[in-house]
Image (cartoon, rainbow, N blue to C red; front, side):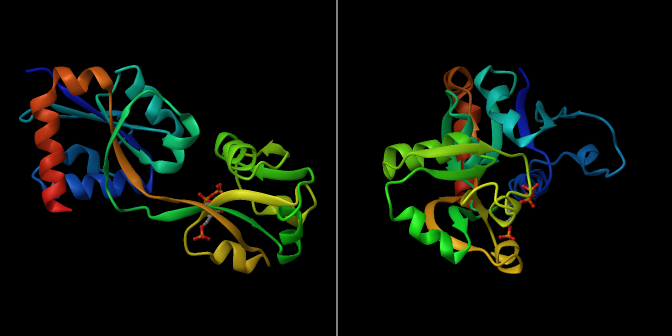
Length: 211
Ligand code: PRP
């Protein structure tokens, strides 16, 4: 039997994913050691391999078949737009993709004038402004602390993830428009889905039963 390989998005998602797998009898003890610098973890008994990758890289590993299965946020799936099957909503990591800004920025969204939008998600922002709102937008790519952009005058609004809303509140910003709901998803390589159909289908069924 060949190894079935999982790519997990580093951080909170990976921790939650491992907890979820434990509930359906998939355990990987060596991965739980917080001091380990290992990158790949193996469960010999079940012939499974796990590795941790940066969230935005997970769809790439899965598209190329370096991982059969990935666990990644819907935000990353939308942004990276790779060829893969999204098979399951895992429910955790729930949040929303939103257009946010100071209350005064609302007027820019109701006009058809050029608007400046800062974001870590340029593809999602382009799709929303160009294809859904039909508004011309200058999209400025940032890598973090996106909320700063309207506060220091880089952009009028941002497109970003809102989970509890506390970052917005503490900085005098608010949700102006909601784009979509997000959560962790399981994605599968298109060839693996055929070649390893029995094992992957069983895994999906076990997870569905548990969820
Ligand atoms: C994310 C997101 C928001 C914040 C939202 O940032 O970009 O800034 O969390 O969470 P909240 O609604 O619960 O306040 P993250 O912490 O991932 O860091 P980043 O600024 O580097 O993107």
